[in-house]
Image (cartoon, rainbow, N blue to C red; front, side, top):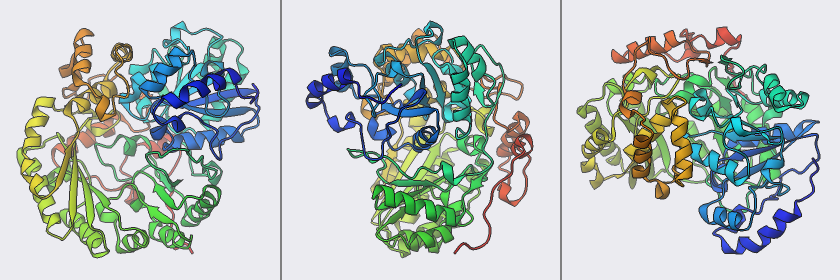
Length: 582
């Protein structure tokens, strides 16, 4: 397929862009975007607004890798907002790629990122806007293959009827192998047959067990430096360098921390060199050090010290464990801006933090807050969850006590986000129950007194229950997703678009047994995702579940193997950087 711009789409766009909100979301051809000719074409679609999708780092990695290949090209698309969707349907404009305005149905492969469950109806809407049948059983040789990856695919069941193939795990090597497999096939069924032989790929109806894909190290070739510059403000508008993948902390609620094991760190020197290239090629003045827990990187202080040498560039660390927030990092990050600092205690009492294996003490939390205040921060934000296994009212009330103590340290603004815990697949808490909305509202009320001195925001308990059903459900939940799209229940992750009544009616109409999905499970109970091998044995998850009931800690596996099974099964090791980088 060539890279000529599709004049039919372009001509129609000219007539509608002045009638929609934020037309800059839809014009494409941004600085650093790539147009090339290639034998095989793929369009990566982030099933949410451009403003959100352009911030997603996984898309940046795959876009870069595919476009560096000698046989394939990659373009991008996003789900337009309601006004643009209406204008496109009225003017017969298909969902199109942002590089060449090519209708998505003309690509050989469509790739979706399933980053959060509430985006599932958005996936179906994207396919409809592109004129592609939403059910995989209805597609012909003339249709693109539809593949999906991301954290949600560790339970592919709810989306099985809509996606042709799921890539489970790391995509850097597997994506190219998938495209080569597709290139070999002539018919649709032959392509799917070849795809089912690629490690890490699940093709419904072709293979019945799948093991996640793992890369053993973070190669610098896989670090995108020519990052695309958006035309409009996006959620995270800054340069991004992934400093490590995976996590060794073993928090029992955290799906990403479990399924993306082992940890693989980049060296401080590599982080510095990649960062210099990003700044040079993008002009960004802010750099985000991305990982699940960036302050745990063994050379984080060295990396930050080196990055201070990049002139006029500020550094942000998106996730900070309270015990890893050192004075050195606080000073280094605070050199340019004194914005708010964010830490995540998750729970208000030490007992409950031990239940979830958070591995931090109350003193860690208070000393991190004190360091931040002493180094010039005036604002602090904290993240907590309610509904964690074994939680009592006293645990909930303790959140307020902690916020009060932190406010007394002299912060001008203390804010807290309190979410409802959702037990996720492939975690020790997959065996635990999720609290229902009425109980969540009751527990939220226990914290109302803290509004006198802290800004409190609560996630909607109904949103949590819907996320729970979509993340823990089986194939029958696919009917809910299909009905949600038909009923225009899309962009459900956006607060202003979220309508719990519509979702509850769909659950009722489709006879989804919410209580059954949400209730506690035993070791012998089958899960819809049991056929997906994340590398962590079900036995290990069950033993962690039992330890949680006794509030027993499991140490960080940087300090010795805890027996989860990943390294042995995949013949990989934690990649921990040592020594001082200069």
